[in-house]
Image (cartoon, rainbow over all chains, first blue to last red; front, side, top):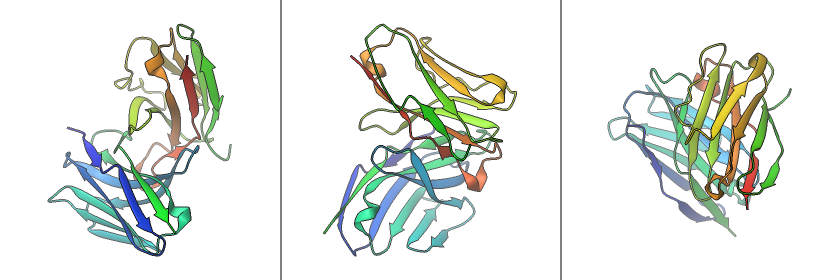
Length: 112
Length: 115
C-alpha cells in the first residue's frame, strides 16, 4: 500500500529543536522527501534522502531514515519563528514513475 | 518560466458550474502533476503527465474531472458540474521527468470555493 502518516501538530519554543516524524508502509521507496508549505504558498522542497542512506545533514536540518521500521524523521535545530509552516514527507516508489505519495502534513508552530 | 505558474489564484464558483484551472510548468520540464489539498488533509494525487505517454489518471475522483496537456507544456484541469466537496486548493507541480533528488517544483495553487 501507499500510506504515509504524520502527526498533525507540533509546538516548540524558539531555539529548541523540532523533530517531525513520518511513517510509511511501502518498502520499495527510492527517494524520500521533506517539503515545507508556508501559508498561502505551494510546497517547497527542503531536503531529500536516498533510500540506501541512514542519515543526511544539511545545515540546521537532519534527516534520519530507518528502513527496517519504515520511519523517517526531520530534525530542525535552533528552530526559529520563520520555521512555522506545514511540513510534508513524501516518497517515490520503484516502478511508480515519478509520482510522489505525500503524508498528511505536520503543522509546526514555533512560540516565543 | 522561472517557476510553475497557476491561474487563477482564487476561484469562487456556483455549484453546478464548470471551472478550468491552468498550470504553466517550468520550461523544459517533461513531467506535470496535479494534486488536491483539502482543508486538514494531505495532498491527494489526481493526474500525472510524462512527455508523450498516456497520462496516469488513476487519482481523478470522478468522471467530472479531466485534464489535458497541450504541446507538452501548459495543462488545464477541468471540473464539470462542480460540487461543494470539490472546494480545495489545487496544486500543480512539474519536474524534469527523471525525478530523484530534484523532486518536484510546485506552483502556489488555485483555491477553489464552490458555493
